[in-house]
Image 1 (cartoon, helix red, strand yellow):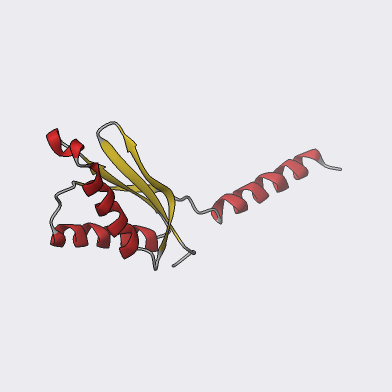
Image 2 (spheres, rainbow, N blue to C red):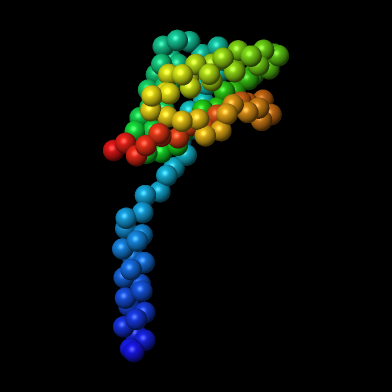
Length: 113
């Protein structure tokens, strides 16, 4: 067996596998607890576009100052975003607090292209 030919065929197989590979990126959208209705819909539209492209989306809700005392408002905003996106997305990571921010990760339900 010709070892050079074997190595060449192996490299060609690896190249072909890399060509068909799809890399999923994690896109981020930042919100605030007091984000207005229109702005929230605008951000949801962005998340929807990210999901349609096949990427995951991280929705971060940042608390400033005394907003941290009303975490339930932030929880409600993230739940609302989740209900708006339930037709196209699944929640990969439920809302979690991390410092002064709360985040949630959503992924596309199926490969929509």
